Length: 388
Image (tube, rainbow, N blue to C red):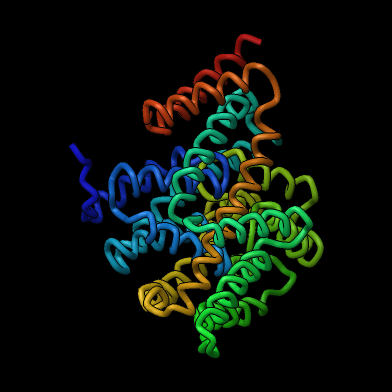
């Protein structure tokens, strides 16, 4: 019997519970988050088609802010409008915010980070398997022609040669539309996909530049608002912005505190941008954690709210749809590069190879829910560390 492909509706309560769960188990950074979203919302719950998911993933890569968080916000907006937008994004962010705040409290009190090496050791190979499974499924829709496959290969090469993610995506989109233009033999209409989001980002940056050197909650908020309005890319790109703002310009953090903050953002589930929560707590306690978290995530909500309604119109335009096709292929290519890098760091001995193989078989052959695999790996890694 053929499995139903009908897209299902979702209540606000269902959206809240689904994204709270995702925010609690989504280890591994943006690539892993997107893989888990594809499994949960495209395959299991059937809330969104794979094509719509890829479009929103590509759009999230074209605007500033945390791409995986913005993808959750896009999905919430698609299902329940502005209410779904707020609920999905907030519930995805909330678990990591609470965890990071508690870790920051322990850090301030005891002067060190909790020891989680064993759990991470076991979780990382599982994350690699999850991302590889998602890449395989998403590529069937996002890289559906030889031309798009060629764009994806070029995107991998450009990224390996040192080009930043945004430049790679812009080149991928430009090549796609250029080939379409040659086929149509007519001048394309000049439409900027990101014009409105960039306008909002520029406005937010202008508002945030009022931050001055003395510490206050308002200046803390403005500093993170500025960063959330302009930063593209991974947690490593975020590190550069935080270094410039809080260590070099404001002198609010030491180098060690900054590295510890980024480490916490990396090893906790949910968005890496909850690094801001840790920094906010160090500088202003529980209120500082709330203010910093709001500052860095507010731009993402506003940018998605501004650009979300444009996506259906974009897809109806052959020119802009072609740009989006190229960006989707480039996004999947960048996701593949991240997976390779994560794999090199995570699969380092016989034990991690075994964890990876078992996870891959469980996902691909038996379709085990990734949440169970991550939970089992966390418990097993903690037990392994305890007996060593």
